[in-house]
Image 1 (cartoon, rainbow, N blue to C red):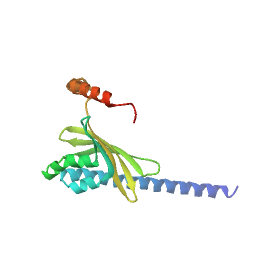
Image 2: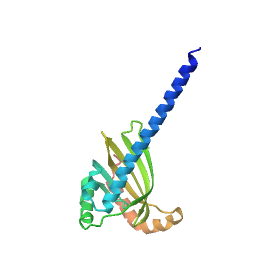
Image 3: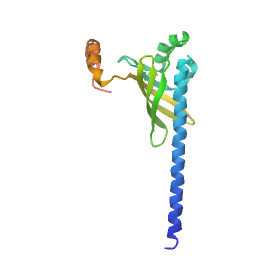
Image 4: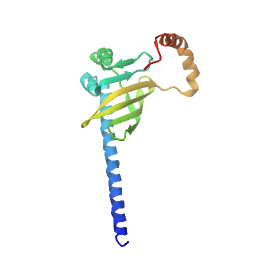
Length: 176
């Protein structure tokens, strides 16, 4: 019984130190991801084509604001190249970002609010960790629509959406 108190104290000390270490690791990982994403957005704003696309995984997927904007990395490079060549791509400034991790810390996902030429947009995505670096694997850009204005947006989209829905229903066979 006399050894019980020191052992409990030792275990409590180790537990607290492990928690501090874990919290520090999460902070460092979040800093690394914030750096990747902030640099990625800056590379678009400054038309650094190589830096922008080097931040992406080889199997990167980009989903844009229109239903048909579903691009792999090569397709997105082709779409983006003329903007970068003209020296005017896009300037998205992060306003808020949340970052989450899978238990093994090799996959992270995030959501962010952005100040853009379209107003406030939402970005979300997935990053994969390779050795000591993170690559953007998937990114979704969407417009934010106030709930009070949703009926107006539905009216604007109604005709185009109905055409697209019919087309997609004809081509979708129910398998993934």
